[in-house]
Structure formats: structure tokens, C-alpha cells
Amino acid sequence: MSDGGADLLHQYCTNARTAVIDGQDFATAIDWLERAFADCGDAIAADAAIDGWITNFYTQFLNQVGRGLEARHFFNTRAAAERLALATAGSALDRVLTQPTPIRFADLAFQMWLFRHDYISGEIRSGRLWEPAQCQRMRDLLRPGDLMIDIGANIGWHSLIAAAAVGAEGRVLAFEPDPINHRLLSASAAVNQFVWLEAYALAIGADHAEARLGRPALGNNGQHSLIEAGAEPDSVMVDIVPLDSMAQLIDRPVRFLKMDVEGFEGRAFAGMRGVLASAAAPEYMLVEFSPLLLQRASDSASAFERVMADYGYAAEILHQFNTEEMIEAASLTDLYTKTLASKTSYGAQYDLLFHRLPRAA
Image (tube, rainbow, N blue to C red; front, side, top):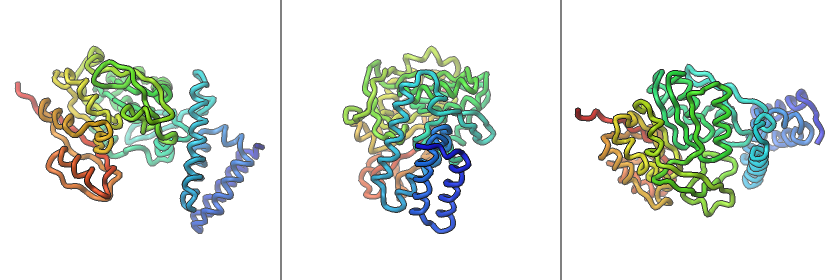
């Protein structure tokens, strides 16, 4: 593969972009990007942002012309190669990812290590960001000096926003069991000198255990799961601990807790009963609610409703996705049942914002 240089690569990408903008000519755009891969391989490899951009658009263009299987294979092949390189690159992240990406979110600025080939990283790099409405609510609620806990932190998007918001007088406790995700999260904390962001390579559950974390989608590092790991060819053993066992880290009331653990929420709630009952209980919690994933975990909405009943929380749906309809429901159990019964919203997911109600003196 010869290196045609940055100028030639820019011209090829400009030609592809023009073909789409001027005439929706995806076939011609594909031809230009394939020439870029063939002639400018070294230039693409030298810049993770360019690699991520050209790979994402090439995949999108293949999907537009009905070559979806080819697109999936192409993207996953590059994602798998990246994972392998990261797993064997020692501490030199820059050999694989070249450099962290400058980020601006609301009034905050920081740097973040992003994957080249990953859906979430692509959304962040493109400027569309990730879960912007949810993160804006979190940013609005966090104050300097606050404590935030991130369960299922992935590569640290929510953790870094929180760390920038709470500042050096605050704290962020981030839990992410996947070793590669955790590595990027830790490196991002270091490059920003966010010493108040503590990243733990742990999953949060009901008991101390060791379990297999499945990684079903090479192109989406946000779909790792503990509930169906045995069915996945790509998996890794991870340690699980109850949050209650880490309570010594909680040195002030928790202002905000975010949890996204792909159907493992009921078990995580079971392991934080002590924290939820304490004076340091989270004032706000942003938690993913996926009836389909909960069903696959042999769970239901009951754990969510127990949190509301036993520890005095109210909940609102902050955002919903993977759905074609708004489902009216009287309770979370009702929402769980109606979602699974729906033909158009069977896989719907909801981001719930829990707010702790005032407690009696």
C-alpha cells in the first residue's frame, strides 16, 4: 500500500463528499474512498481522526447502496484489528490512536482518547456527541465539589464531563470492567490531569464474583454485557463487586450516579442497598431501563420499583430510543410489559432520571 500523502487523501475525500452532496452519488463516493484506502494507506494510518472519519463514511455509503453485509464486515474487521493492537501495544496508546481528541461540551473543555472504529467514538468525534440531552441534564445538576459515580463508564464520556464540571474539589468514581475501555478512560483522566477522577477496572453487581463479560459488537464498545457472555465469541473475565463494598470511597453525599450496564441493573441495585439507605445516597440517578435486556437477564422492572418504594425516589423518562411510538404507562412494570408486547417498540430503551425525595427528619 503506497502513501499518496495528506494532500492526495484530502482531494480523494473532497471528491467523495462532493459526489454525495451534489448528486447523492454514493457509488462514485465509494470509488473515491476505495482509491484513498489503496493509495493513501500510510496517511490514513497516521491520523486516528481521519481513519475514523473515512471508515465511518465508507461504511455508511456501502449501506446506502445495499451492501450492508459488506459494510458490517469491513467495519468489524478494522475494529477487531484495532482491539488487537490496543491489547498488545503496552502503554503506548499513541502508536494506535495517535492523539487524544479535543472536546467541547456546553461550557466545558477537555481531551479524550477515542477509538478509531467504534460507534460511540465516531459520534463524539463527529461533533454529534453522545447522549447530549442526558449529559446536559447531568452537567446542569453537578456543582463544583460534588461527588459523581459512573457505573458502566465505557471510555469515560460521562465521567470526563462530570470531572470537568465538579473540578478539583470534587470527585468522580468510575467503574468499567472492560480492560481496553478502562485503559482509554484512565489515559483520558491522565491527559487532562483529572486526578480527582478515579477509574476502577470493576463491574458493580450484587456480590463479589468473577464473571465473563461478553463483547457482542466489535463496532460498538457500549454493548458489552454480563448477561449473555457465554454466547459471545469475544469475551473477557472481569471482577464484580457490590458498590456497598466500596462505600469507604464515598466521602460525601453522592450528587449524581449514572448507570448503564446492559440489563445488569437489577443486580447492581442489589449491591448498593447500603449506599441507597445511607445519608450519602445519590440525589439523582440516571439509569438505563431496557425491558428486552432485563428479560434476557431473567429480571424485570421490580428492582427499579423497589428502589423507588424502599429508598424514596421518583423517576421520569428523560429519553427513549429504538422505538417508533410513545408508550403510555402507569408504572415501570406497566412500561416493561407494554414495551415487550409492542410490535414496533419491542427493543425500546429508556433513560430514567431518579430524584431522591426529601426524607423525614
